[in-house]
Amino acid sequence: MTTSPHAPAAGAVPIGIEDLEIATGHHVLDLSALAETRGVDPAKYSRGLGQDEMSLPAADEDVVTMGAAAASALLERTGIEGIRTLLFATESGIDHSKSAAVIAHGLLGLPPHVRSVELKQACYAGMAAVQSAIGIVARRPQEKVLVIASDVARYQLASPGEPTQGAGAVAMVISADPALLEIEPISGVYSADIDDFWRPNDSSTAVVDGRLSMGAYQKALMGAWEDLQAQGGPSADQIDAFVYHQPFTKMARKAHRHLSQKLGAELDETPLDQAEVYNRRLGNTYTASLWNGLASLLDHAGDLAGKRVALFSYGSGSAGEMLTGIVRDQGDAAGRRARRLAMLDAREPLAVDAYEELHRSAELSSASDQETPQVGGSGFRFAGIQGRARRYERPAG
Ligand code: COA
Image (cartoon, rainbow, N blue to C red; front, side, top):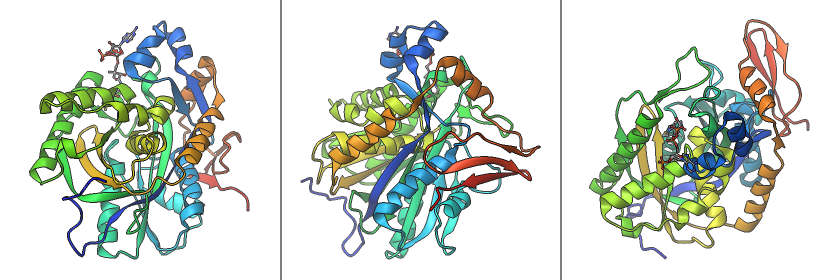
């Protein structure tokens, strides 16, 4: 058991992740097929980027339906008692004004006395939601916060970013009963205004300077690490596993090696293998990526009880943060691993031409009423546009 000089002060309540669940889109694209179509060596994607597949939402799925699917499965275990806040983190929001949180709130059948809001800062917003949730629980420990991080990563067809697309959601309950991961109070933060990746209001795909974004990621990592140290956080030899935001899984490895080199230390790489199992198959899930990595680590690393993990979030534009937490109890990790791998196996494969067609038709105009075909299997559906508003359905019963 790691002794924790960084634990909450005497009398402070321990706060963190009580439980977590993941969900993804209905379709999957095998990246070796994409490589063949694009005339690229498949090893560039599998070894060079560390990606094997990408999830794709069906025509009747989006960030709301994936987020609701993850949260619904989670709330079946935790119940809704005590939840008075729903924070929805996303880069791929579906309205400039109305938050995905209020729609998810309705789909989940949550009571009216829940504050619901959306957070945005590229891939970083999931971390911002978790930190905001901790603040709310610290103020009133009988309250819980439902955090949903959900995204569809879309780049232009045949662009360098194309093989790093993906889709998925993570839902977490943050509470004063952190049965899964107790989050320590000190974190390291870093912000810098940079145009490495952004999505103009009139564009459904991101504009990205890939090389610039990789450098900005590493700069934010070192900035957050140095701040963590300056704030009195744990040193590298007091951390048992590092989990990183994974825009593509190789990026986590590059970041880890960068940190090792800067520290002049040989940081263990084994946890990187355990934290990338789901991400290699989901693709980039933006705000959800780091937490999918945490889920993968907790499901694949064996007994981590009492061990300290460091979680680094990076959102282009840019904001970075590293926090640390102590794993409490992984529960039935083998059962969860089997269920999550089965979920990934159950996605419906798409041929490259069908993927390209889906990509081109992804954005519906709100100018005319239209219905989406029934495809996705979670029961939560984006049913179409009516009166310029998006309409959703939830599972019957
Ligand atoms: N076998 C094995 N590896 C190969 C290979 C092959 N046949 N061909 C290329 N590679 C490797 C390259 O050496 C490189 O690895 P390295 O960076 O360790 O040297 C890797 O595959 C990628 O190749 P590269 O030519 O650099 O890729 P790219 O210019 O086509 O695009 C990104 C890479 C990341 C810039 C692009 O995917 C992108 O823009 N992604 C979106 C933005 C993003 O995710 N940013 C990350 C920070 S948020």
